[in-house]
Each structure stands twice: as structure tokens, then as C-alpha cells.
Amino acid sequence: MTTQLPPTLDQNTDIQHHSFVVIAGDSLSLHCSSTVEAKFRWGYYRFGSSVPTNIYNGKTINPTFHLADKVSVNDSNGKTCTFDMNDFQLDDAGVFVCIWLGVNEYWSITVLGKCIVY
Image 1 (cartoon, rainbow, N blue to C red):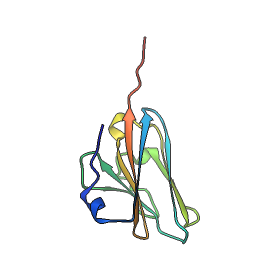
Image 2 (image 1 turned 90 degrees about the vertical axis):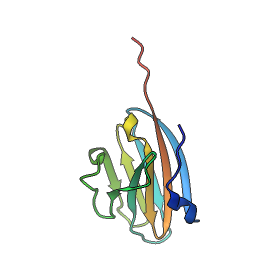
Image 3 (image 1 turned 45 degrees about the vertical axis):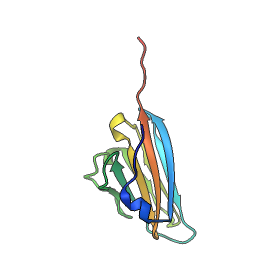
């Protein structure tokens, strides 16, 4: 599977991009860090979409985010922020973004199905 990142990425030079492949049912932790205190925010793009969904606004998880019940964010010290998501499913694939102090860090997540042999 390939993906094209949102058009705004081409305009910003402070971008870090990572790609991960997870197996359905797996969990994943994503980490952002800054040398100074920062307000971390998290967003999500479904593959093929250029419109982000807000996940975390620096204080709380967006309860209307369709994966909110699988997500937790630890932003306890202002210099690091950890985003955890449990039980990835095929429809959860997409691009997750951490934004702080004008820096965007992206993770493209591809989810593979499990093959069950009976």
C-alpha cells in the first residue's frame, strides 16, 4: 500500500516522516519530544484524505474521534508526549501527526490482516 501525504507537507521544511507496518490487533506508541516546553497536539488523516481529524488538542482527547476509545496520550512534562493506540484494525490505517512549535512529525501506519489457518 502506498500513500500520498497531505499537500501542506510539501510547503513545510520542518517535517519528520516515519512509516510503520503493524499487524491487526497490535498496539503502537508514538513519541514526540522538544528541547523546550511545548504544547503537543495530535491529528489523523485517513489514507487518501487531505482533511485532518483532531485527536488531542494539548489537553484532552477529542471524544468524537472515531478511535478515541483506543487512544491515550501522556503529555506530563511538556517536553515529551507519548501517543498510544491499542488494537489496530485494518480501517485504522492512516497518517498520524504530532504538531508542536511549528514542527510536524508524521507516522504513516499500514495495518496488515492476520491469516488464520483452521
